[in-house]
Image (cartoon, rainbow, N blue to C red; front, side, top):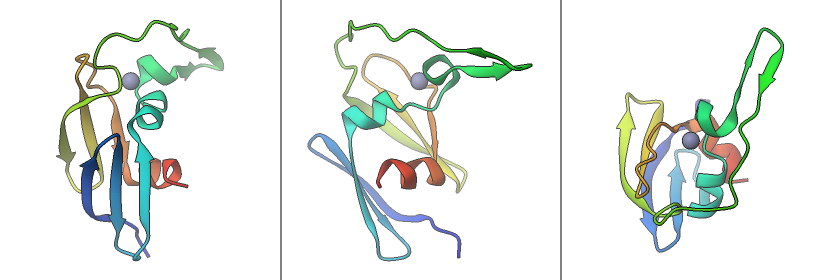
Length: 100
Ligand SMILES: [Zn+2]
């Protein structure tokens, strides 16, 4: 069975996701941002050479705050953070794993 969210909503400092299998995930915004899946946050592997970005201990204002969320087709959401970071595409798989 394919798992997909029936409802995604932001509550205080977390994202609450109701799935079609009756499970509910709660993911804190901090975890969501720290696990941002985009290339500039997570790095990428190019021909067996890994590029791993160095995480700055300095967090700009709005780093852990969501400006808005947009759905991407029917497989993911894109999160716009208040510090203008918006390249993270969170697929349902990613969200389900973060909620565990
Ligand atoms: Zn990112």
